[in-house]
Image (cartoon, rainbow over all chains, first blue to last red):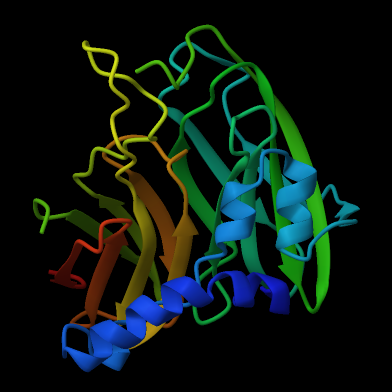
Length: 155
Length: 104
């Protein structure tokens, strides 16, 4: 997934902490993960999160299959399966539109995994669950509604 | 350092069907305790799966993932005897790595 330069700059504070960690030997280079896109995770709407991830304007696609319950009795644990049938799928990102912070995460499958992921998420209120797939430099999306009878944010 | 992950992998041809359960509170930072004090956010941010030392799957996630997260994914080009290692790191810098041998 492409991260914007702005996103990288915003992450610079974290980078400083990492440099300090290197200096003290607490971290070996191999232990460092890719930059966690804080601006996308902090976004309060799916549209803003997609902008921060540089995937705004993803085309609707029927080749992304989202399997999730129509009605979730417990919003704290909603199982979601996403399979992408788009050739060259590199990553799958997941959003829950009505959560306080809609961006759930990105699963990178480009380096030797199948275009599939299963994850269990919290859903605060009935909402669309949205998957965005990056494939060969293009972005695609699909959504599915999940109705929630007990919220996932009150515990 | 959290409790050990439960990693299970089933080989179907050269594809490893992996399921992993991590023990983690995944606290959102939105909840309050009985005294009305906000419980600080505490969640896994990044996960990495390696097959024989090569990164094959990564995830950047938020506090929206359920408590004691479960993930399933499929790794290509796997065979019996391969080492599958999974590492997570949370927002406090805590991390945990566990490894299994496929087909055993």
